[in-house]
Length: 121
Image (cartoon, rainbow, N blue to C red; front, side):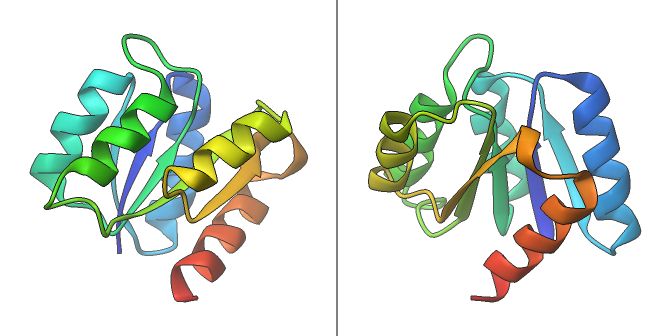
């Protein structure tokens, strides 16, 4: 499975990359919202793990752009953020996110497990 991790915290993105690679997935990382779109277009991932607080372009803007792109609109997007407000969750789901996880509530292993279950739905 090809997974794009859009996360500006390098330690977290590298930790997720290692765990997902160990589980057999092909991983790319984008560190900001602008790069996320260009990497997604080149990589054509099955899943995008998307933080909402990003430099250059917010995660919600990236989500809207992904869903507006004819080649990427069917890509599963899972928001992985520490923004826990209902407003952000509802907005992300309304824009087409498949699921929304609060990073602080899960370990990397739990996130991997949840993402794999979400992908299989």
